[in-house]
Image (cartoon, rainbow, N blue to C red; front, top):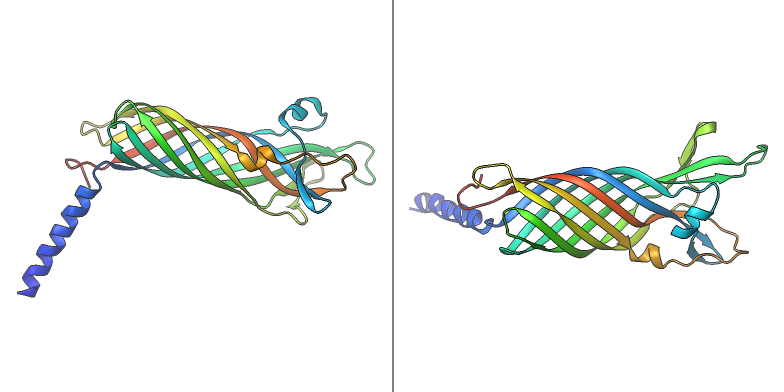
Length: 242
């Protein structure tokens, strides 16, 4: 008797799980990440941000702008036709900061490149024209972690972790918008074209160091970034589940 009942219970549990997935979608994204990165420095017992966005345009030998790669996985939980909770995990690769430094024995400043990778968790509330396809707009928050920075001097073929370098932990305010379009007759597979703006509160509010502060590079953070991506999305439905 038990052998007959167990398969039936398993079938019922499987069907309930499938129905519970209705309105849940999962996806993969790939794209470009345009970022403004700033060096976090340590001095006088505290941390500072080396330059602001305005400094970047006025300070010679400094270039905090770079374009890297965006890779992500995500899930959307639909509460109704117009409201969705977006949960995403993104890898932002090869964020860079360039500056000129003076080295002993060198007459002219040497160009240095500092780079790291960031990993962001996104929690975004989205409003959309409908749950299947069309325009969507969202706002959210999420932690960001930047790996320990590495420095390189291309002209001298040097590439190594920065001494005393540490990870950076920040908190992003997120702006998310884009367009979703169906690519299947069952309306369960989609392509999304998306824009993601991230503003690290910790990076934006970090103070500049005093003039006489003796400091060293501590971490790399990204106060502002913009991502442009293409995503593939699979949406579970009662009619078209796997």
